[in-house]
View 1 (cartoon, rainbow, N blue to C red):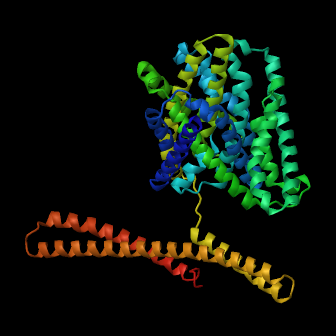
View 2 (view 1 turned 45 degrees about the horizontal axis):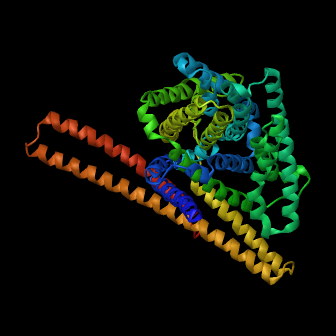
View 3 (view 1 turned 90 degrees about the vertical axis):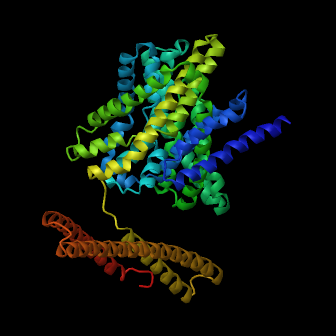
Length: 546
């Protein structure tokens, strides 16, 4: 009976999460927002006693963090990263520490009652989140400049791992005094964790890469899905020595697998690996955000009304003070980076699953310390931190998540990328590949079975691209028809005013005003229509039938 109830609870979380993620997609919202709200509602319908123990929030949070940053490493473009490697390195290391200290110091000055927990909260909120960031940019459909995207991507990948090490080795012992150690020991543990993370990630990636190449395509998904767990788990076995390299090991495992030739291996099947990891990562993120909302104790918040105000204030300090100060300091050396670009990078530091996972890990340590050392205040502090992080996350996801695409366009940090040209280039390249395949088959270099299979794949790919091209062409045609109709309606308005003026039903001043306004609108519509017709004319050469 208990097993059935446990499975029911887990199924409820997954089903509710998947449904809410779909709703977010439909309404073009960052998906963590409805998931967290759904978790809060779920708490009111499912008994809380023992539920988080059944699900294992701390465990889920850690494997989610490992998978998310592994996927980010797996998809990272190292060539573009080189354009901004110094900025990324500073933001992801010194920048994380700076954000933690600035946020913690300002929070402590404004709210002295937080004591040293202010620094722990600052560290939890210091990392930007790759999943949330990419979700925001994709939802807004905004093509950010490549250099800025590489900075945000690289920072989001590495600062999650850095923040995890900082939270556990540096700031948690400030709060749990029983875990405190001399500063030089903490510094050594921090540096050793970074080095160990790199080495473990390299070793795991090499072993998994070898296995993938030896066992064939049937095991690619299984081996890829287990890689972040293996890397993170091996890293965390070093916790007996005070090291916590698990998160960094997962990052580097992803980076090395994506660049297998640098390890002396053949190229690996990147598409399959990324697709597998993306699905696993998304599923785990759904669970974590649902559980984050579920963990929020509304009764505790309502009994302590200052929690909401404090959470809002901390969010404001992180978003408007700590983050901008860190970005401007860390990028001060880059003279090519404009003020607008710095402002955008500052604002695009969306918080997400990384902060949620670190919050769960930190609270788990506090709860364990409360039991081991007999200090119940640690458990109360854990509740407070959970509530504050919840408020700060919601503010970040709503405020930054919904406005980042708009701000990118306002600041002029977007790139002009023609979707038609990209699709046509991809279609033409696939056509060339198909022609080459036919030549190889004609010359007898491949057998019929392989030829038919590859031919079907390429034809399906071409069909999919051309289907998207048809959709875009239809959208442009619809836009042109709309402009024509608007221009026609304005002409009819103008004719009506002329008739009324000639009949003496309209005084000259009002007629002149209306005429001038409508003529300006007609001229603007004509200009927009001409541009749309030029675009449509260009589409004739790249349409699916071309």
